Length: 231
Ligand code: FPP
Image 1 (tube, rainbow, N blue to C red):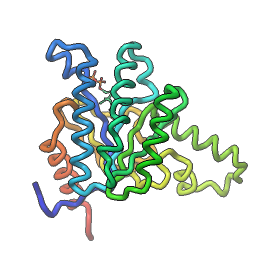
Image 2 (spheres, rainbow, N blue to C red; image 1 turned 180 degrees about the vertical axis):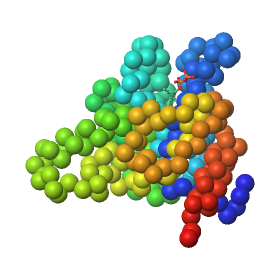
Image 3 (cartoon, rainbow, N blue to C red; image 1 turned 135 degrees about the vertical axis):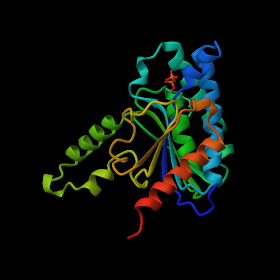
């Protein structure tokens, strides 16, 4: 690990490859999500330990509802279980936030989201942001609707004012997007916020993503910044 590396302020992580991880082991896809949830918990802790200010994990997209009902239910169940432990893992360090449209989630999950957000809001070491029923286009459309509802004059809409209506209001723009599993696309994740991001695509499947892979992505980010930084 390079001790002098330049850290991204905000990392976005697309947790991809759970299904393939399970398939390789002749297990049901849901077993891949169980391992994926473990990798998520571990990675969030690693980010906090490494001094990352903000990390956003893509847990469920607006398109993921098209998956078989059993699979959707198992992801929602894992998410609920995580929320039950979230206060313990956050301690007095991590502030947990959610982005996405909570509308279609169960009332029970919505209540848990609200409670966890409220209880961890004052923590300052790191913001852990979880994207659930999130789509970048949906984020932009909902922001546009809010602005229209406020009756703002068109000339008063700026990039900054628009950003403040997005789900990520108040968070820094994302500096680094990490996507494991070999796919090389953004899949509707933080499309506005990643306008200037560096992208690191990795061949590992998400359940196998650990400290070695996070360090490799951070080193790669730092190298790119060094090359283009300065005069
Ligand atoms: C993508 O892999 C993964 C998802 C759509 C779900 C991610 C969910 C978790 C990691 C667990 C629950 C989350 C939390 C926050 C506790 P894929 O299923 O598309 O994999 P594949 O491309 O190999 O089929």
